[in-house]
Length: 106
Ligand SMILES: [Cu+2]
Image (cartoon, rainbow, N blue to C red; front, side, top):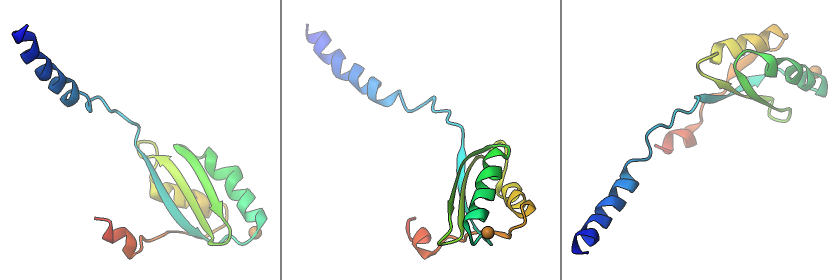
């Protein structure tokens, strides 16, 4: 019995330490582009095309800020390819630079 009492905390410790491996999540990155979009038609054009680009998981368009937020698989595409895809539709696209608030997070 005394042996069991000693073993239990040890076992519990193992149970806490061992998980946290095997987290093989598909890496998704979200990049915000500032684009030359200015009306509902532009928004529709973006939403009709960009979600079908290779590796793209999600697209959000904010007309007020002219921002297009794209989430994509890093193993399938990259910032530049998405940028090119937006430009191919006839818009300018520029990766939105992180503001100072982003730096202060670290
Ligand atoms: Cu437009």
